[in-house]
Amino acid sequence: MGIKGAFNKLRKFIWWWLNYIEKNPGYGSIVLLELKANKKFVSTEAYQAARNFYKIVLDIIKEGQEEGAIKKEMNIFLARTLCIGAIEHIVIRWLVKDRKYSLTQYADDLTDLLIDSFKKQDLGTSKDVLFAAEDRFNAAD
Image 1 (cartoon, one colour):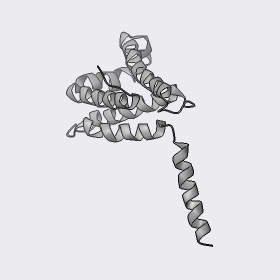
Image 2 (tube, one colour; image 1 turned 90 degrees about the vertical axis):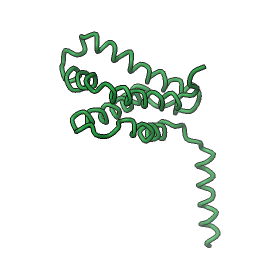
Image 3 (cartoon, helix red, strand yellow; image 1 turned 60 degrees about the horizontal axis):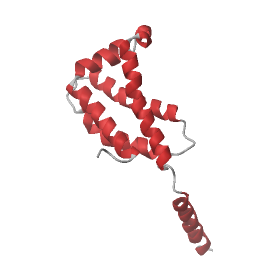
Image 4 (tube, one colour; image 1 turned 90 degrees about the horizontal axis):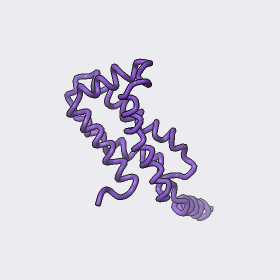
């Protein structure tokens, strides 16, 4: 059956990635601290594997736009960069520190932050808030 909904898939993807690196810190160190810092990285098989991996995030964002959950006007490539960059920053910090805490503890908070920034705003709700504020202001006269 699988996971339904772009936001659920994004949450699972982020959790999975953080969990994988937590269980395989050597892999994270090699890819994020050694390979990605080298200009020759783009000509390696590891780079091609990373591109395929990052495509998953791009596909999730596109799915969210098709569902109407993610803003249509959002630049999907910039959104992907935001996701990957945030995940990698959390992982790199963990790798260069003492690794005494769980990476997965950040999965929900990071996902919620990303979802909030990607989410299509419900204009009806915004208008309701605006009109409620206007009613309170007019009642004060």
